[in-house]
Length: 148
Image 1 (cartoon, rainbow, N blue to C red):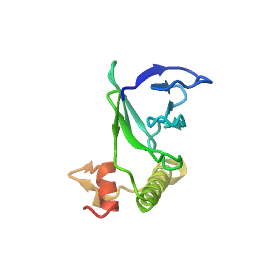
Image 2 (cartoon, rainbow, N blue to C red):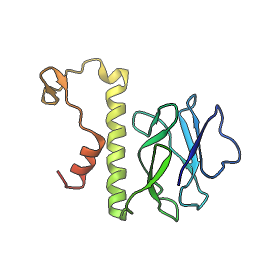
Image 3 (tube, rainbow, N blue to C red):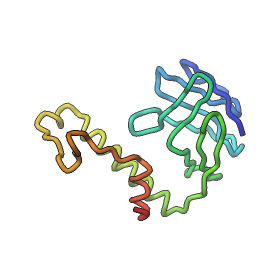
Image 4 (tube, rainbow, N blue to C red):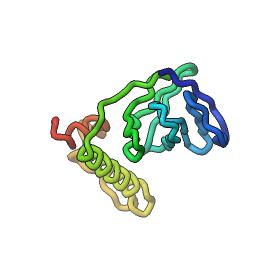
């Protein structure tokens, strides 16, 4: 399935199938579930939410979209305007992912609140040759699921 995209200021009342609506002003991306169940999918853009990539022609959202609260339980990515289906996840995998997301969110806000940063020293075990080591979300997930 190929998705089209529309940049808007405000989300329309009627979301059309096959269209991803993007409000950069409000950091919001909405579309109807790619499975056809017509559930509205909201993927908020934020440092701990989804990331939008747009190259002037193609739109991609990352990470994957897991609609675990919908009856369809669909799981997919939008990559270069195309829906790429992902494997179904068990309830245990979903719970682990939710736990990981909560920990990531807590860490993000803990590290980015002004009152928490006043007396912080660099964490030297996360530094190599003066640069911060960045562990990707996928590396963290693989570790969480016991693959690393």
